[in-house]
Image (cartoon, rainbow, N blue to C red; front, side, top):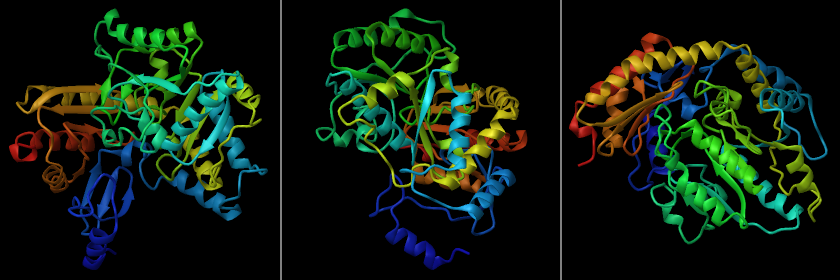
Length: 430
């Protein structure tokens, strides 16, 4: 039950993501979720096009995930991970090592995607300390996004991201132009020229290259050519630098491959995963690395990796993640994601002809409509709710990342709502 008083309290006292306490965006109370639908307090049901920020790939209230949670809860909800291990963590890490490239042998469990990125960057810094060098700079791409904590913010887009106001407080790193060659375009070798020049110029100062493979997520929802990622790997090998792949948004099937790095057939030295790791049930992330990186870190003056979250390896989260990855291992996601991609190509791509639209792009279970003008968030959100869908646009992007279990009818409803939204100029900023 959600009362008018609850709504007033929420508006006055609860700070929601990326919103103002002085003039907050409207919030819609959800009281239940099942399958691919969210139920509002007034009884309306919304088709979820967001997978709760790309995490709920199996849908909501999945019986197998629920069962894994309750079975683990009956044993123990949490124990510290320092000096203690437990079956759920061992099972999860065994699955992660099995399903990722063979070189990635060592798993560090963390609380969230941002923390996984922090861990990856600390690993890179401490790796070089273990080699007797101090290297404190990273090379990354413009239009990237890696999270909201400070180290993660420092490698997000420095000009156009939500973190630009922190300039001067954050460490300054090196940014190559975002790849211009799209995923389906013919490869243009000059697209890599700026990155090649920067990595050669700063090779002695760089601890690592960090990027989102193939799909740049919240920084612009852009899909770039696999050959670019291959050349990044080749350049890192040439100069002896670590490559960090942030697969928090792309991992576990979202792009049509289990991991986006597979589109380029490359293996990073450090891999970050999160979001869909537990199927959206609860927060958990992991950072995987090679034995060579782990051993070098362990030879540093500290003698160990200097990080240890309180809720590291939480048994509840690990148990649910084990079941989520087991569902993925059964392979149904491949058929589901391929079907979503076909339908999005058939139904979403025609929106390119709408006057408000600058571009439409589709990859795996991701569909993006880029508009000429920024969206009017409050007006457009209200319109989508009235259409019976949950789509959360931002900037000039209206995008879909639905649960893999969505039906064709429900996916069509999402696309039709976007098409209808484009017909109203009030949904966009002046």
